[in-house]
Amino acid sequence: MRFAYVQPFVESARKILAEAVSGRIVAGDLRLSSAAVPSRGVTAIVGVTGEGEGRVIFDMDKETALRIASAMNGEPFGELDELAKDTLSELAGMMTGNAVSVLNDGGHCLRVSPPTLFAGENVSISGRALEALVVPLDTPFGEVAVNVAIATS
Image (tube, rainbow, N blue to C red; front, side, top):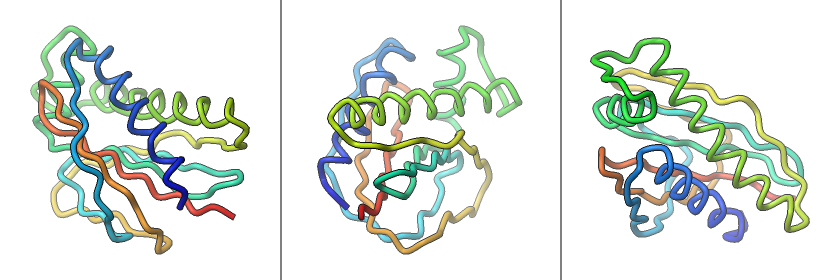
């Protein structure tokens, strides 16, 4: 995976999260991760195709997800209902879409699939063995991990 692919996803997530929750977002240290990803509780996955194939995962615990959905909707959520899930899926789509637009403007040719949201305990996401780079984003509501795994041809 080209490192050049990772930075636009992290910057896009940081920028859009900051706008969505009206707060400061701080990126942590980049780390390498295995293909299998244990979910913290709420995970949005967006597929990426084109000259690179893979996925971007936005992972957070349930409390962080509820706080972010609440901030974005201007109303408190006690449970991860359909509106909260739709909000988080839309957020994942915006963060990924923005990054892909930046990459495509730079001469790449990538497309995204609609986000899929998983919620629950003891969920592990695995698939094609791809090397992933992970950057935690510290938000006012908790941590959101950005996990990027894209194989290039």
